Amino acid sequence: MKKLKNIEDKIIPIVFFATLILIWEMVSRIEIVPTYILPAPTTIIKTLITTMPKLMEHAYITAMEAVVGFIISIIFAMIIAISMDSIPVVRKAIYPLIITSQTIPIITIAPLFAIWFGFGYLPKIVIVVLVCFFPITLSLLEGLSSVETELLNLIKSMGASKIELYKIVKIPAALPSFFSGLKISATYSIMGATIGEWVGGKNGLGVYMMRVKQSFATDKVFAVIIVITLLSVMILKLISFIEKKSMPWIYGNKK
Figure (cartoon, rainbow, N blue to C red):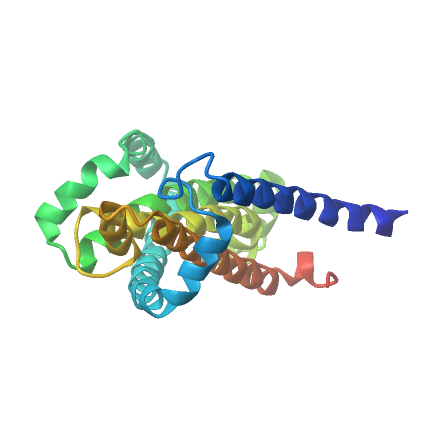
């Protein structure tokens, strides 16, 4: 019964998605909605195949910006989160600032980065860092703060230093929360790079999307969306793989 339920759980969303695609195809084919507004899925797939070489050139740039920004955001987040956890004064000073910064939509300050840093890779990377930094920092901080006081007192009574305290107890205990933040930020990284490219640049999926949008090539816009989605899924899968390898005490016995 359990096996049948698992099969059913997988089939139902597939059937539902396939039904939506079929309805979409029919709506486009009989032109209930003009094709330049909503092209048929088959048309989008054909466009995706024919423009794949060009899309891969732009995807490489966007992925590079996203990965570099993502790595930098991880480094900054770890430094800030550990500092806030170990030094109460730092937490009181920085935490409200971090929360307040998230009330500013990134799209509104992206033009400023273009003015300050030009139209190269740097402003896109900065945007990715700002987008990814917040979820990672808060998730890691929450994980570090969730360690039981009794366990910390036990390790301290054994003469452990502050560094050993983090190495032996706090960081391993915070890994589940840390990877949760990484997964959220991973999906944001490609989006952040694309938003940065909307403001200006020579290459990248965001630049290409703006170009084809201006010529009303909606099928190419959808093709870019598919590539962006696939890149986001790939980064998410990579984070999940690293997560399982980093926490064998949780995933060691799971296939």
